[in-house]
Image (cartoon, rainbow, N blue to C red; front, side, top):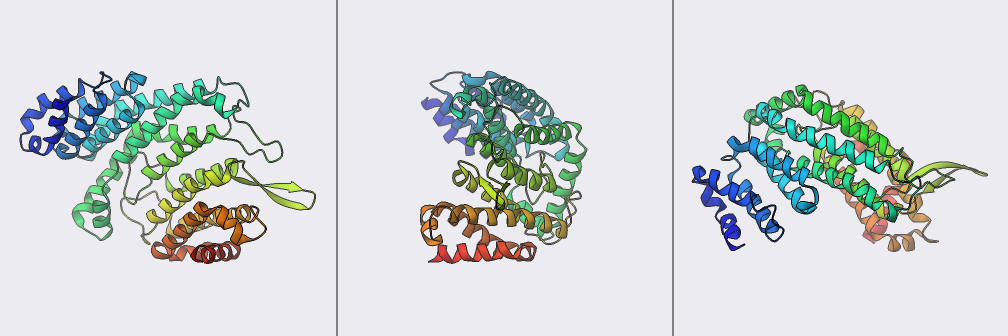
Length: 392
């Protein structure tokens, strides 16, 4: 174990001696199948990938092969360590030119697609309406592979620095992002994988395995699965291009559909329309608010960019996001108000949600103030009222 730690500690030194990486990296990866060494081996692997990603670009095919092996190994490598390996492999791939990125990722995306389909088929074998506790064994294989997709998505991000330079008009950064966008959109393998994810996100809410509220038809979805899906959305929706960017319009549509399926939906009552809340709405709200905050960040630039040819216009984006944000704020306000006889008392009982809402309002004000014009008057009033209570 001390040898692996030493190898990782010398990651900066290996950077100046790239010829030795061909010996060092296999020494580290060969320890991944040994339970007593796997955690230290992964830590060393990550340090080497972080320091030497430019020097490792020639070994990207072997890196992808390693990720495919980790995926097929299943429980032989702990889930958390698998995720770390995937993120590091993706970061090495991103050090290459876009054409080489798409070529390298093809086999891994194909393996992930196969694992996702296998996980969905296994989940569909669970008895209808099974409790969430009993559903866990059926759900775990799909959760594991979706977490790997999320890790891959994080590793495939362009750095904030490159995205900011491009937004400021730096020609080198602009050319880099435009080239990446062109290759990502023309890659058949990436397009197929993006379509698979969108299809999965639509299908999951319709599966009969979820328990449903008979009055509202809201489903009781596993928190971890919901967080996995939103994590993929958050990690792949960026200011710059992304290999598995699902499209801003489709992402907003997915978030709205998920909210209606899990958190809140209108129902008819004897006195007219009312709103039903999911059993765990207050626990699941923060993940949705974080996703909306990410979209606000993505839309912070007011003008369209050459590397975003398929992104909706600024007006359409604001309109779609304003509609969803209005729904969220109004529903959350109603939900919080139901918690106690006074709003102040209710907010004391739900401080986390109100803190997230306040942070979201602050982000909109700082980065996308024009979005306030697309909110319904009710949502603006509720946001102000919640913010005042948060400040007090």
